[in-house]
Amino acid sequence: MSTCLVTGGAGFLGSHLCDELLRRGHRVICVDNLETGSLANIAHIRRPEFVHLNVDIIEPYEVAEPVDVVYHLASPASPIDYLRLPLHTLKVGSYGTHHTLGLAKNHRARFLLASTSEVYGDPQVHPQPETYWGHVNPIGPRGVYDEAKRYAEALTMAYHRQQGVDTAIIRIFNTYGPRMRPHDGRAIPTFLRQALQDRPITVFGDGSQTRSFCFVSDLVRGMIALAESGYHHPVNVGNPNEFTLLELAEAVVAVTGSRSEIVFEALPTDDPQVRQPDIALAREVLGWEPEVELREGLRRTIDEAGVEALVGMPK
Ligand code: NAD
Image 1 (cartoon, rainbow, N blue to C red):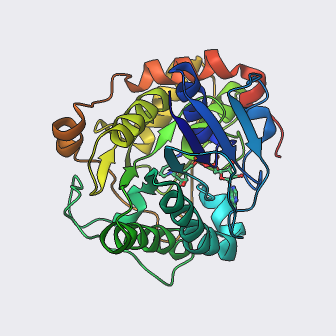
Image 2: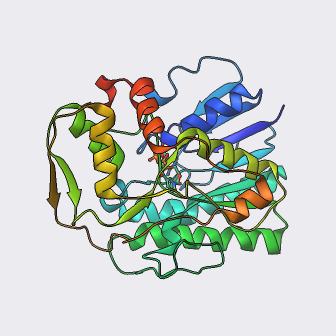
């Protein structure tokens, strides 16, 4: 049994990670100031092996008990959040990552950074392998998120090379599942909310831009496998099956049996045209690959979250 500290543990991915770590018999310290997360995501966890600390990691912080593994997920992640919180996003990626790496160093813990496919920007290479350095607009509205994550990756490698911290970097591609907020602006919760209410499904642009969607249980399995490996360089974890946004909308209509029509809206600034992970490295070093295909994942999202949660009011 290990003690795992999860920053962002009351968020969408973090709360599923806490569940799985507990299921595997570990102790979990969840550090989350509920900026974009919610107590509702962890309210079902009532056991002595779990503790939630309401701490803002932008300020220095410590925990009293020994920690073996640090999973650093705290950061606004949805465009709606980081466009609303640009300075917070930069601070959590910089100060927050410094403080969390410092904590991992003090505890001699393994440290895993939750990075993102957004470090590739609007990619000129397709699918994206870890060796591709990206094509990011630093001064566009999305730059606060993309550059914060690129900085956090550089910082993680510096703590590894200069301070000897045992670090890992996971580059997460679009992940979905229960506990996504219905109004967080990401494609799957938006389409599900609209379809379940028979309202028009709003696709940006002409819907030809592509994404690759990973179900949350696959992602969490890959994240824990990486933390438990001795690997230090970035590893892509995502589902390589690529869909256009229009195909996604059609899949959501089919799975929900909705009467919604599909309508088109203006494309947001710097919205990437394509997004598909090359997961050869994850297969090789982790023996990992996704198992849940899109329609099954959509059905599981509806079954596990429930229709009421998926059509909920804005937070
Ligand atoms: P989320 O917004 O649901 O979770 C982020 C959590 O971090 C929230 O609970 C929030 O309250 C917490 N947090 C934010 N600032 C904090 C601070 N200063 N101190 C303490 N806690 C703070 O987002 P998510 O989708 O679960 O994403 C989790 C991580 O995974 C993020 O780092 C994100 O960049 C990364 N990621 C997610 C996806 C995805 O598809 N969901 C894709 C790529 C990368």
